[in-house]
Length: 109
Image (cartoon, rainbow, N blue to C red; front, side, top):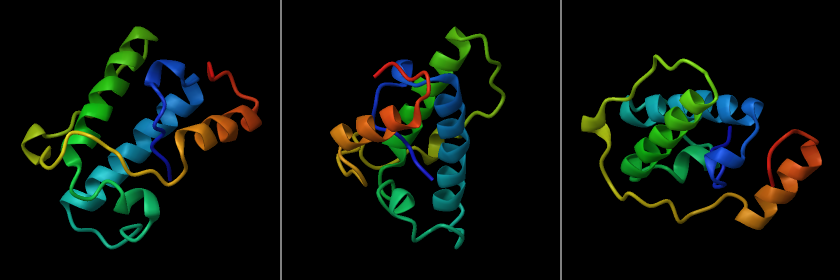
């Protein structure tokens, strides 16, 4: 489970779409108080930052549309509360770049 802290336009299609799926999972866990993955570090770092998560989703949607993907899974803005900035990281941005480079994908990093 991961939401990258790298600009969405730098992610390859695989990582952009994967992040989008995982963002929806985290959103659902947090707004519905679900137990599954609620203790995962990636979920915990977004608790209290649904506005920031919502904004990341909007960036994803814009990038997906630029790449010709359709999008049919909007988030309810009324749940986008808390801070609008994510400043907690599971891995530093530098480490995230290293992780992506090791994957050998087409991310532009």
